[in-house]
Length: 74
Image (cartoon, rainbow, N blue to C red; front, top):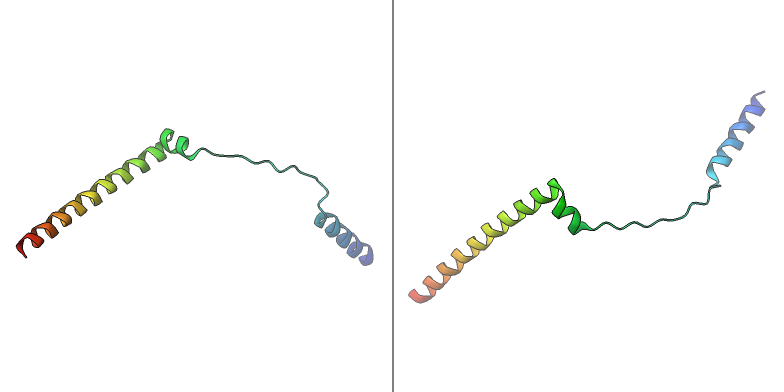
């Protein structure tokens, strides 16, 4: 009886390991721009990125002005 159980388990594992189904590969594309502009998470992400960009631009402008002032002093 144990031989039959062992053979059954081996046979069952062999059947599971063989891919019998022939599935078609389907390709889908996502328009990231559409998702970012039309979802709540995307809109909030864009707003935070714009705020960070403005802060960095202002920082670089101040640094540039400081360098110009130092250059004039020299």
